[in-house]
Each structure stands twice: as C-alpha cells, then as structure tokens.
Image 1: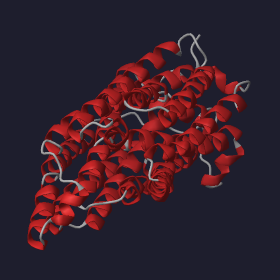
Image 2 (image 1 turned 180 degrees about the horizontal axis):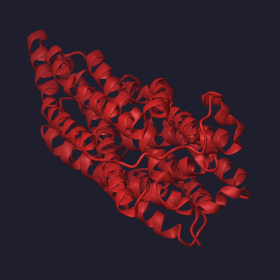
Image 3 (image 1 turned 135 degrees about the horizontal axis):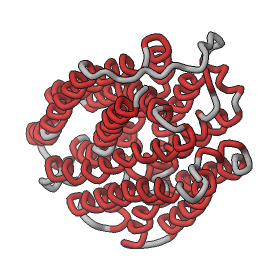
Length: 416
C-alpha cells in the first residue's frame, strides 16, 4: 500500500467515526423527547439504548463474516446502506406514532453501524505503523468526539426547542388532544433523520467509487470466530469493553435527564451541557492521543479509569450543579477508553484480527444491558443518582483490565 492510498483511506474511514458518533449522540435528545411524548419511565426510555446496542451483539459476528469473505470496503458499503435504511424508517415510525416502531428503526440503523464499526476499527489500526495503532485509533475516534459535541447542540435546537409537557400535563389532556400532542412531538424527529439518511447514502456512493487498499491477514484462518479467545488480551478486552460501553452509554445518554432531575435545569438548557460533555469528550480524545506519545496507553487508561471512579462517586453523593460538572468530567476521562481497550484487544492477533474485532464489537451490547439496570434502580429508589452505582461498577472493571494488562507486551502500542 502506498502512503497516499493509506492517507486517503484514513481520511474516509475517519469520516465514518463522525457519522456513527453523530447518530449515537442524538440518543440523549431522543430519550428526553420520546420520554415526554410517550410518558415513559426511566426504564422504558432506556430501551432506546437497548434497541441500539443489542444490535452490536446480534450483528457483530455476521459483520465479521462479511469482512472475512468480502473485505473491508464491501463491509463498509453494506453497513452504510443498512444505516441509511434505518434513518428513513423514522418517517413511518413517526407517522404511526409507535414507540415500538421507533425502537425497531433504531435497531436496524444500529445493525448498519455495527457492520461499519466492525470494519472501521481494525482497518484504521492496520493502515500504517503497527506501533502507532492505539494513537491512530484514538485520533479517528476523536471525530466521534466531535460528533458527540455537535449532535446534542444541533439536535437539541431542532428537537427540544419547544418545552415538552410534563407527565401530569400529558395525562390531563383529552384523548383527542393527547393524540395530537404525540403526533406533533413524534413528527419533529423526521426531518433530522431524513437528512442523515441522505448524507449516509452519499457517503456510500463516495466509498463505492473510491479505491481503498485492502489489508490482508497474515494467513487465512478457518478455526472460527471464537478461536480468537486463545489470546488473553482479547478475552480481557471483551470483558472490559462490555462494562465500559455500559458506563459510557449510561453517562452520555442520560445526561439531559440527569441534568433536569438532579441538577434542576430545563431540558433545553441541559442540551447545552450535553454538548459541552461532547466537546470535552472530543478534547479528551485528542489530548489522550497526544499523551500517548509519552505515556504507555495502558498506564494512561489506568489513571483515567481511577479518576472516573472518583467522579462517579461525586455524581452519586453530591447535590446540585456539582453533580453535572462531575458528569462532564467523566466524559473527558473516559474518552480514551474504547479505542485503547480495542487496540490492546486486537494487538498481535494475526489471522484472528477480524474475529477479535467482531468479538470486541459484540461486547458493545453492554450499552443495551446497563442503561435499563440504571433506569430500574432509579425508578425503584425514586432517586436517579442511585442508578449510577452501576456506572461505578463498570469503571472498576476497566481499572482491573488496566491492572491485569499492565506488564504485558501490549504496552508496545505506544510510540516512544
């Protein structure tokens, strides 16, 4: 592969990190908006995350099989088309005013994203110097962070511009007025997702007509996906990613709801804090990528995970705006976790790289499991902060991952 081809490929693949980051970071807006429109509990609202992240569990292995048979480019194209279809399904979901239909559209959309992520994450690590794989993946993931900043801000102005009615106000409406209210609220989301679907289709056309370098595995492996578990770093990465993604989704997806219920501000005001969280998440990615020039990724991961544990405790035990500020702090320090865990997990896996990628992507199902647990605890105790003990547990697992791998050869991911 030429350096020019590598550069073009890296630019195009990096754009994908922005696309799926943008769509994922509309979820907090969607949770807040649909929770009001359909008078949902915390647990019911958390099913938005479940619909998205269960797709990672279901589609990661099929996505990996597509990669093994057809290569990275074809996998990305298939993923983009499915991604766009999911976006367009928001139109009939809104027209039928069905929460279940919304969840189905999100699931299909996420199936496409899963295939894209299964391809893009390992692809970016092998396009260039292996010793800089963690840095390269963190850099690409930084644009995921850019999306985390822009999505709440843009989506908030479009979707949350009009203050929603409270559950009691919705309950007091007549049957006709309630139906009209739900219809108006659900119709608001159609425009943004139609635009996104069109953009994703344009991206698919661009990828179709662009020649990308196809990276071959060291050797073809016919031992199956689970053969990758012979690598201990893969096993640990799957476990750590499962818990980390659970923490990330709990923190970011419930940011607006947390801000309104714990910090006591309005949803429209809260969208600005969600955007700030996305901004510091992005800055954290770029800053973490810079620090990895001088600090081993695994050591940086350990320090950041410990800090996240402390900030989570502050969010649980604190009161007022300090709890929201601590949540924003968590966004900064957790920013390097996914790409670093991923890069460590697939290092030195050889012919098992695509399989290892699929297994680690499957672990993203943690984003479907932990938000409902957080929602259930919040509903059960009547205090949303209590649900964040779930987040604390997740970060403690990341601490254990970093400690276990501290002395292993995967430290060579850093560039000295």
